Picture 1 (cartoon, rainbow, N blue to C red):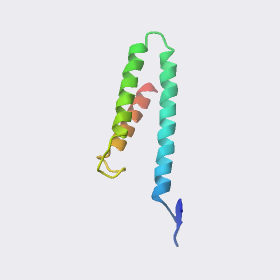
Picture 2: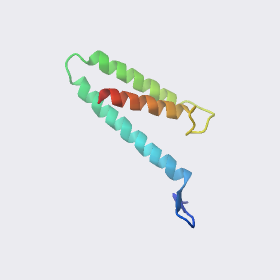
Picture 3: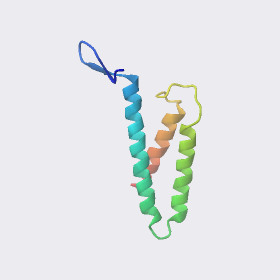
Length: 94
């Protein structure tokens, strides 16, 4: 089992490594979002805003976990669309 394939000119990442790396990035993004939502929830008068972000996050997670036909990294991928939605929410909370 290779995570990186040795080739003559350099090394080449395996699909397994690329997916593992993407999963780690997804986890870090979700933990960051969880932290920012908790910080916002502690602010006065922000409960409606936090609930809106939580609904948007739930929709992104649902989208990411639905069955799909396109390859994972294609522009039509539900997983890619969900990642973009989560990144948008993170940017808005910054």
